[in-house]
Amino acid sequence: MGFFSKIKNIFNKEVEEDKKEINVENNVNEEQKEEVKEIEKYVEGLSKSRDNFVNKLSLLGIKYTKISNEFYDELEEILITADIGVNTVMNFVDRLKDRVKHENITDFEYLKEVIVDELFMIYVGNDLLSSKLNIKDGETNVVLFVGVNGVGKTTSIAKLANKYKNEGKKVMLVAGDTFRAGAVNQLKEWADKLNVSFYGDDRKDPSAVIYDGVKQAKDEKYDLVLVDTAGRLQNKANLMKELEKMNRVIGEILPGNPVETLLVIDATTGQNGITQAKSFKEITNITGIVLTKLDGTAKGGIVLAIKELVDIPVKFVGLGEKETDLIPFDIEKYIYGLFKEF
Image 1 (cartoon, rainbow, N blue to C red):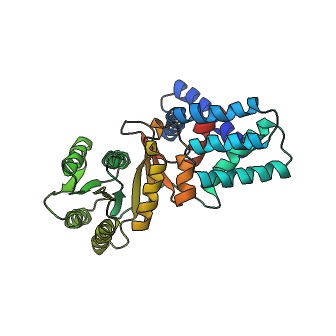
Image 2 (image 1 turned 30 degrees about the horizontal axis):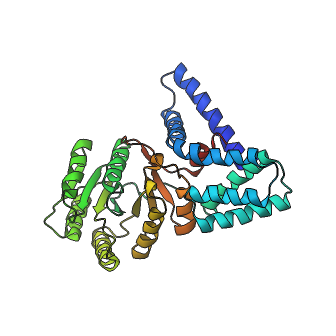
């Protein structure tokens, strides 16, 4: 039994058993409920990608009676149109051909298992990946958010503030984007709505705002400070200097901070999102990706492309518009949601 069969069996069993328990008793373990909700969010949120991408893969087994060069050519085309990326796909197909040859694979049902297993390995490789933020209990932790305008950066900050507030953290939002008109007010509106603290002043230099906000957070013993930044990428040199200054002033107040620098990317922009990731990686130390609007694209393979081409782990994915729909990325749940009907 391949990797995918194992996780499919585990998740199918888990969802069914937990649903029965939830129906029988209302005091079922809250963690079980959340686990089921997350699995279902992946299944529902990846429906567009599943309908487009996975259905095409399934049809290959009907169209071709044997594994041929024509089969591989069409497989390559399907994977590339899923935004996995040309170089990644070429390497993947080469590995697949080797396995087919050495394991003498002729059965398409078994080949499907091998395809999913190899796609999983694109993301995992030899790494032990975690979507958890590097947050230390009993300390003030600063997380810096970067990304171009329009990708959902401010909304992502608000959704994460909501998540950590509900987990009992004392959260502050800091408006470091003093460049875009209305950005400070937008973040303040979210802070008011979520009933979390806010610091911002659009008349100041962004680093000065961040310095004052982080100093207040440290003095008042906040657990988590989420910092918005301007989404300019046109002038890399200026942005690099600005981010270096931000990192410096944060580190002066809280050594070792920011604990994370998260790049927000809109999944619906496809390869353009990959280009943004490469550009920001050249400018500053990105520790993780927040991938928004994954439910809005039929090209869910962008998750694999980001890891393979940029080598930055995805930390959170957006699978809906509600405040609870930005969830920690889990490669096994992602693979299950994408290939559930494969």
